[in-house]
Length: 205
Image (cartoon, rainbow, N blue to C red; front, side, top):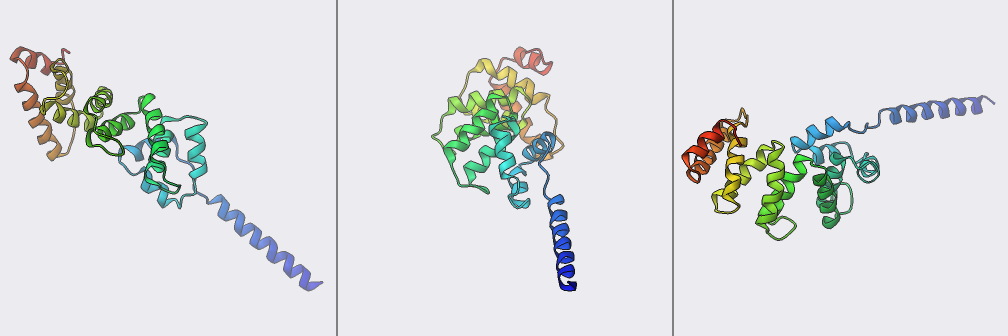
């Protein structure tokens, strides 16, 4: 009888310990937390740091809830095979779903992929399309890349003033990026009449 009581006490102790571990399980990210991780390009690393515990939750929020931030994360996980089987085509599908909901990072990433030929053939026109959309919602990476593409003679001169305004009004505390923006602005200015440059500096486009 005494042995049975000791056994029951041990079972209860083990059960409580396991329950405590479940309480310490990784919590799903809030939308703001995930957006910040994406902006810092730490979203995939965080999933790995969390021991891939959130795969099912991430998938549900991407497929069922259709949150753009989770569609982007799920797309990246698929494209790079992070915690799940790699499926580039499906990953790009979810990235595009996030871009269709105007997630700036998704728009920028697709524009970059079309520009450099990552996972797909180079398509400068498609790159410009996505980068223009990302630039319009103040994605600085997209604005910088788009200016570089314009400098190579691609795109329409009619679009130069709008991008000039965006870059002229951009804010960064990184000195290297600041100098790069200054060079790009100078290059754009050389492609436009002086009165257009003057108006762009005043944000009149």
